[in-house]
Length: 494
Image 1 (cartoon, rainbow, N blue to C red):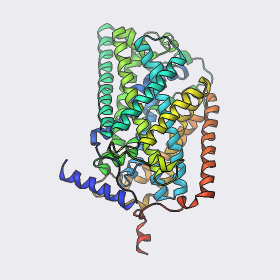
Image 2: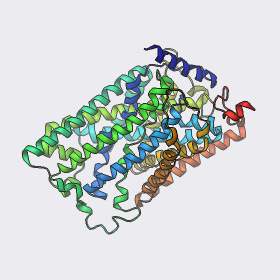
Image 3: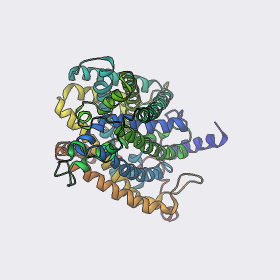
Image 4: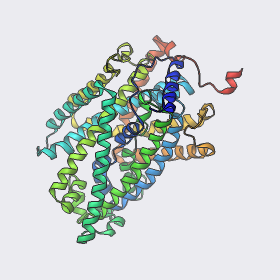
């Protein structure tokens, strides 16, 4: 590590102490590993693999161009998130930002929503890994019971690896990201080469509505075209996961904001190339649309069954790495709230193993939540909870944009650190407008009613626990630990 990075790491530890926390987590994550954590959470290949069928069903092949709009909007959000990450490098990300720059009561709701978004995200990823990638790869017949058992097994393995070492998490996610990048690049080049030499591609697919050509509500609010934004909105999220592991990064004030922006930009560009190649390669639009897994069907028809199995293997590894990142980020969210005495069973949940320097009880909690959801919820209810998890990040990002506009003058920029300069205000306003549109896209389709109610239920449950703290333990919500090092300059001189 260079002298500059050593100094930056020491400065981050000093800030932890000033904020009232003893640095307990081990700083082992370098710049690429931090980038890999954000990129692995996004997991562009996984997102497209899981939602490409939704685009074909609701908007047809032409719906892929909505990816560009979503990518630009999410990049605006990432730029604002990076502004926070460049100044406050504490586990808990938006929970800490809101608690210290607004007030702890507001921050608590940021943390509560983030916890449930991440907790349901782990289950969604691992269940998709089991049912859509692993079972087809090894030739198992479709079975919800089998998928649930495999999901529990995957959750256990991920929890063990995360508990053992943060370095192991970084190494595994770096490997998974490298493999995912290689697979997408090879598939894009392979599909392109086959289509050029055999003439099997159809450039007209890029402008066709496919089976939705006769849909009279196609352009309506909540109609097919609007619903197709689901692919981008459920894929290009989670880039802020790097900020949730900021206390384990070697040079967080530089590496974390760069990782946040770079991951969403890289995913946006790579995803667009992948979508174009896939769409041009469709030989039979209605047939592919009706298949259970359009991406796999396209690869099989153009490159053969061996390439399809390689794709499934790569997707499985990428999903496993993404699940590890989500579980790790969620455990750090629990840890961050618990050490402030603002999470159930906080005395237990704040404990860090002195040997592994990882929050073991918090990680086990995420595992337990996943197992309970797998065992207790019937298929339809589980699916509604998972879909509800797609609304939560938009709510959180919208709240972060409002927070930034309210407190941006309290964020002193570090020399050489990430900064938007004079563009910060227009970018933040544009990002907030985008998130407002994204929420409309997510909640207006007819099948979004139940997931929206699920989200409202989670907020209500949080309100009940919040009320309990206000009645029996109000002091933990009145002040933040440590010094108020983020006070506005005017306040500091009074």
